[in-house]
Length: 129
Image (tube, rainbow, N blue to C red; front, side):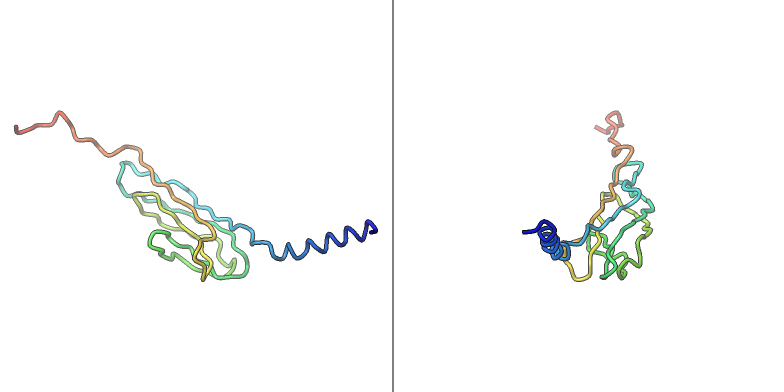
């Protein structure tokens, strides 16, 4: 077999594989990724800025994973960011879903931390007996 024809055959065999390859991963970020409360157990308040990049075709939704609450939905890459007023006392996950699919395309977590642990009861307090 002639060398140029050999490489042409290899190149033609590679073309269908490119068409069948899976979609590129969806980029999905949350900024900031951490919400800091003063004391353990307190509700943390933070504006979270979500950014993503989805393919041109399809319908997508940003979902608060616990309870599957939809925060917003859009077509294709029409929307690529969202500002969310986070209020929570524990780490919370957010997911991007394509309409009609059960598994998320991407997921991020907003981690809730605190500066001080819950206050301990004083051992030197007054006792009646």
